[in-house]
Structure formats: structure tokens, C-alpha cells
Length: 67
Image 1 (spheres, rainbow, N blue to C red):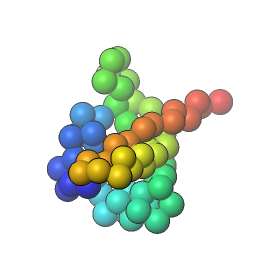
Image 2: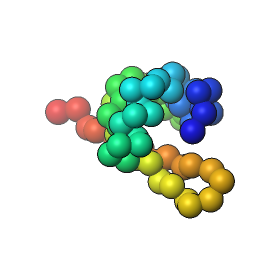
Image 3: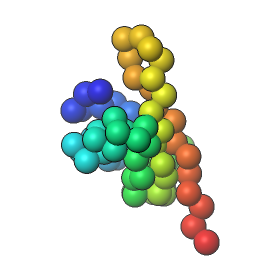
Image 4: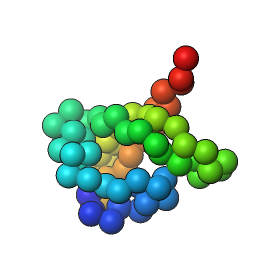
């Protein structure tokens, strides 16, 4: 994990210590205001930590649909 994480920068969010702590503790972090790379619109989602066991850390996003 990096302070200037490209995954979060591409989605218009800062990688905060709060997000990092949640990912390390639970493997998930709820994040509001993620920017879609395709449409540019914002949405809320849950970022999941997908550790490959190697040198790099990967993330996945589960979108939360607004009712």
C-alpha cells in the first residue's frame, strides 16, 4: 500500500490512514464519492483488499446501489 496509491488517485479519492486501517483490519473499507473511470460520475462502494501474496496488493470494488 502506498500513500499515493494509483488505484485511489484514478478514482478521485485520497488514500487516507482511515481507509488503510480498515483494509488491514477487515479487508474492506466503505468509500463514498468514488469516480467512475468510464463515465466520470461518482458513486459509493466497498473497496476489498485482494492480497496476491506477492509483491503487490490488488483492490476490487463492490458498488452499492442507491435505493
